[in-house]
Length: 114
Length: 110
Image (tube, chains in turn purple, red):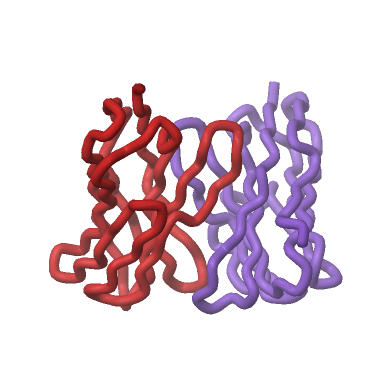
């Protein structure tokens, strides 16, 4: 079985542009998470999906960030009007359910905003 | 809110040395505690876990005990190998999400 996959692995964009980051969770996992990891720091929670709905989006830093999971599987993290401070590695994780279960992490997308 | 504080690195050791990485946490309720590891060029992997007070998690020679009285979950290994060189993250699970420490870079020299 495949693990969590994320595309692209690297994304370089210019300040002010729009980007989309994709996550394919492990098949059958109902819970999906996005985290952001800045250089030299641990991952920070952004948003948690249970099925198709965002159960907790309290970690999204502002309204330029948005995420969807329309069919309860693949998720897309969308960032509008990117800023240099958005540069980080964006990690996706999935787990069998949202209650205590091991979260399996993808390799991440490294976003660089010039 | 929930938070995790772990020993700052980097840590450099010789092979077969004893490794300890300190981790303390602040959380409401009864979180589960984890150590994740990130090997060079790879993604985050779960190393070990403990779900309640006094539980001991262990894997690959690493151990950590959930100490509620000291709100700690220190990671230990008695004899490290070069292959243990990695970044280690302490984390807690509460309210359906993980909160991570800043990570400790460990380098083991042959």
